[in-house]
Image (tube, rainbow, N blue to C red):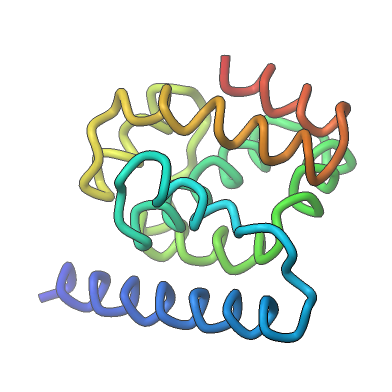
Length: 144
């Protein structure tokens, strides 16, 4: 029953994030696709998995990086706070301290652990373009 509530909450978040993204595009604020949208299109994962995976990567970065370095990455990903909140909710507050923990988080969201290696170049490229070379380098180093 608890899992059903988590899945329902995930779907609500995905719908809200998609609606926010659509409104930004209509208002001319979102000239580029969101990171989860990019992941969905390129990898074939569903929106919930893309948003949850983004949140898990952000949670991992928050655990491993200095606050200032994490802020560079978070600023490069619009909606980062929502993705973090979603990941924490889906993972029951699980701390992601290493790459094995990150792969486990992906498994809990219905993705194979090796999906992380497919997320990595897309996330790195997105952050590099949106946040600059320093932010992209931080993500690349974190996820290698």
